[in-house]
Length: 205
Image (cartoon, rainbow, N blue to C red):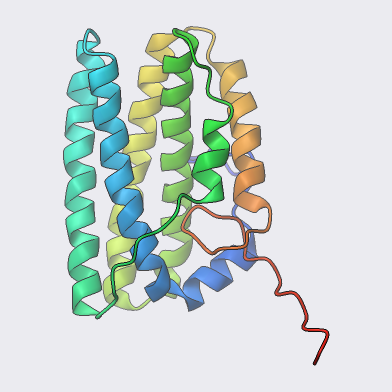
């Protein structure tokens, strides 16, 4: 990955994902809305889990409010475009990241913060990749969101550095896992999925 505000990512998003997402961006809006809600709930959960960490609480309180505003903006866009809301099962990406989280502190706190940084960095990268390929209204919105996600990534990483001086090796381990999840073929197209898997040929055809 080039240096910059997504330089903790160990692999770029595949072109196949970008092409599929650009062609099916209306479909992805539903998943995008779910992602914004999940981002807010993750920040709030960390605040409740670590109430003694005042710096974390202050930072993530602001972050959660911003994520909820983003959800409202995506929701408004979906209504304007007549995109229906649909319930979704958790995607492979989020489930896969959770499998590496340690269960006891202080390791768990560090893992949660580093995972938050990786998710925000991947979101930033994908907003930037999609923005110039979408209709102007949506593209401008995604450009704005990319700036926000870059800031959120930096905030999570800053909190992780304060939580554990020896954070770099753990970040690399988690980032390697995240890179595989973001680049391997997926059965479903999601905002944080890998590229869609090729359909299985029908032997009857």
